Amino acid sequence: QVHLAESGGGLVQAGDSLRLSCAASGGTFSRHVMGWFRQAPGTMREFVATINRDGDRSFYAESMKGRFTISRDNAKNMVYLQMNSLKPEDTAVYYCAATRAYSGFVYSREDDYTYWGQGTQVTVSS
Image (cartoon, rainbow, N blue to C red; front, side, top):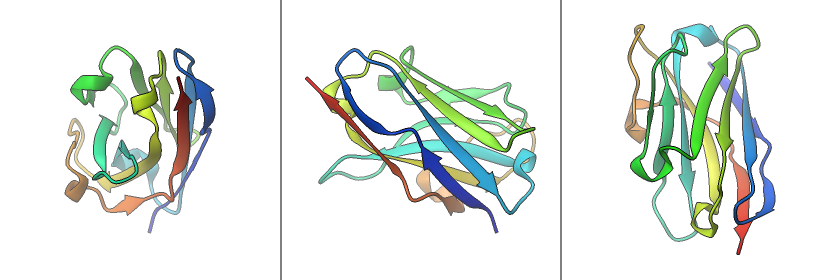
């Protein structure tokens, strides 16, 4: 059983940057693919970014490419989401997710993930 805890959300202005963190515990972190998803009010949860076990392969939703960067530190059991040039439409609850996987794999579908955090709110004002 993997427990995930997000942090780093908050209220920022358009154009600002924010770094989200996700602390993992209870499992072998380095054996899990990690992902970030988000859900805005009244919408379905959507994929943001994913990173493979070794941290050398990542994949992003099209609207986040060039603005968001996912990274991980297996020694610290942490995954991060660096968000730059934030826009009001980035306002959402951001969730960290994990799933066991073979080396090299990444996953962008919500159903592929087994473990989820409680989420952290990001609000971007215009």
